[in-house]
Image (tube, rainbow, N blue to C red; front, side):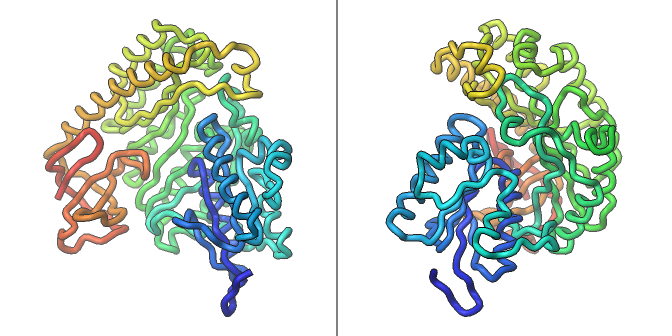
Length: 435
């Protein structure tokens, strides 16, 4: 193992999948960093003594990407170009035995929750005093904070409960301490993440506690923005709307995955909500939090979906006018209810056509919403410099997935990681321009 003075070698961590996986990687990286290793994340050419691949196992495309990544490093491990290759995360949580047989070049597979054992298997000790600390892979001014694990919803198509188990909320005090630790390091923007934000607190406190948690985080000095990701529409914690309306540092932004709208599909998908209730939910959110920006996800091509269902979905998109929307086609995941109960009989080309149709409609809606912002003044956070522009985001934009605001890089006094007000001067389908 290559070493320098006071250095135990280099650890390369490669993270695939969502921001929840990213938090796990950051926690593990902090442990290695404290032990004296050189730690890198998603390096352009990972060639460390130890390589750790944190995998995703959500849908077919994600599983394929994870397997291909493992195989690339397995080839290097076979040629003895690294000392250790470890695999952790959702894919190995779900398919550990199969992976061990298929890819013996991997030194050891770990699941989603026992990755601390990587340290003990290397003869090192996990430091419990660092459990709330992370080596941030994001820009230093924002961070993701995971408030719970698991999901009890059992939607027909979703493999997440098979991987993560039942919903488990973190104690509020634990989350507050983590936020204070991050504020002390200069973090100003906090993205609260979970498989199901809506259920936060139900297991631990016997009540929906997301509103109280957000208020408590909002009261911590130095917290500039709080953003909410992955709420669930059924049993929605409506009091969070009051918190958004009353607290300036709680972004008027909500990521709430709706998946479909027709009663036929909502029943087949086991979403525990009706079309009428969904329409009413959107009306109530928009009434109680004027100006809120909603991000949602839609799923097309699920077994049982008809052309009439897709037309209902289009009409709903015209009504809801989501500022942000992602969509994906149905993936037939073994172990899910849909896999056992239905035949995946909608051709892939039909799934793709339906996806293209709703995304084309959404692009038109998003472009109109962006155009309407020309001339307005919006608060933004500057993330980075790219070419001739500072690249920033408003309170309505989450990193990686939402539009950005481009400001001339020669703007006097502008700095990365600071808040500014900007006047929007132009807009495209996906980005805004300002000064």
